[in-house]
Image 1 (spheres, rainbow, N blue to C red):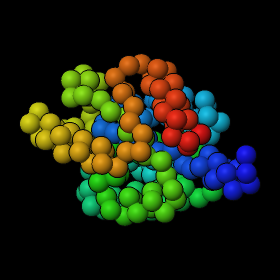
Image 2 (cartoon, rainbow, N blue to C red):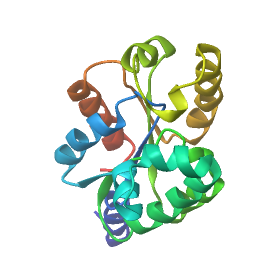
Image 3 (cartoon, one colour):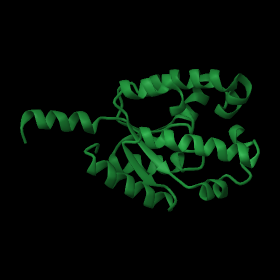
Length: 182
């Protein structure tokens, strides 16, 4: 392998892997399994946000509103991405914010879409207390449908997230290898 090819491979291998997808897609469950398989550190953005502001992320969203929450999320995202090889579970709406998308691009993040269908989301989130899940069925479905096109447009890698977490993590590794990310 030539020197420039080796350098390109090292740069690609150090790209942060960012899991995106709707609530209930399995980002926080698949993330640690994927990180272990590729030898990266796992970080959950909602947990990092909770630690940074000393209040649970879901309470922040409720108490400060979505606009301020997304501003805070972009700040913590920038901090988390400093110099580590990591798998990062983004919040379901992180990529809806232009500031966060800019941070992701600046750090060369590989966006992996954990894609699930509406029936799977509805089953997984039955009884959930997540703030954005508290609307009517129609409002939840509208939010889901609106985000699907955004996820599809941003994804470098798409993984069917309906199976169990181990299967999803294995498929993600295969797709990431095929794309030269790991």
